[in-house]
Image (tube, rainbow, N blue to C red; front, top):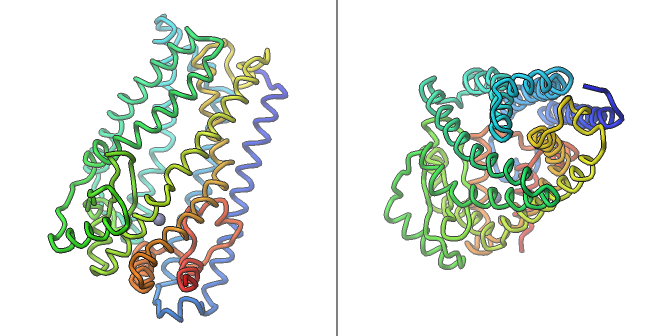
Length: 414
Ligand SMILES: [Zn+2]
């Protein structure tokens, strides 16, 4: 490891991002604490009785957890750059495998170490934090079986992807980053495509919908102009009391997914409003808009990497004494992680706009704003979401507008 100008630049970027995120967390926590004592006119108008004290305590606990997690993750990255990568590379090379095999072994070591660093956080999150607020329903057995399944899927998918990528890097040296960009897009689309049909059923049991509700949903989807007839109700209650609904997949595999934890809390009209909102995401092509930005961000990172890789100190600046394709790939993963954090504010801004648009779509389709408002209130109530957030925090971290802004926007829909 040699501390170069490139190392200094990366250190500056990663520490700046870390500090800015912690500052935003603290500013937002102050806003939330202040909002506790002041009456919330928007919510009082609609008669919402959210347990604000409990949601504040939950948010603060999450925020403190996330601050510690971020500090540990960034420290781990720097520990690996300063000491870890070189030693791990030495160990992987000691097996004297062909270069692709050494690469797979090295990345495997790295992934397992990173998982080990994250494990106490995952356990704390489920069995302490979420349990304290009554959300966690996972047993250690479910946690272990989820971990094993995720590990199996990870080894299969990542193994295939890395083998192909390392092969391309070795054979198509001059255009490798371009080809890799296309492979990553392909992987992204494949995962989106197989997620609702292959991955989701591995973790959740599908619950049959009530026949009457099902036919009303189908009628609504026809009116909305949505071609998918698949609305999946899944058993979220097996793992967590959190409630949710989302739109996933594309092409023939697209699905609207709704958790039993939400279904059990909202009535039929409210369920239809939630489905109409998800249909709005589909009709307004929100997935496509999001994907274009993700691909753009990916290509910016790849161009940057292709440029940096030509620098003589490139590998050594990130802790690799011996240059290799898998070292480049590791550095790419680190740069991409920071780039995603940077692009996130834009993705979230777009996502919040999409939420408002899907709400408007749903209200226009149903012809009445109340079922959606009531469904959102119940959703926020059972998830203990804070109804007010600081705008700077929201623009960086929140993919959905806060309840206050959202209800105000729905009321303004003509
Ligand atoms: Zn939405």
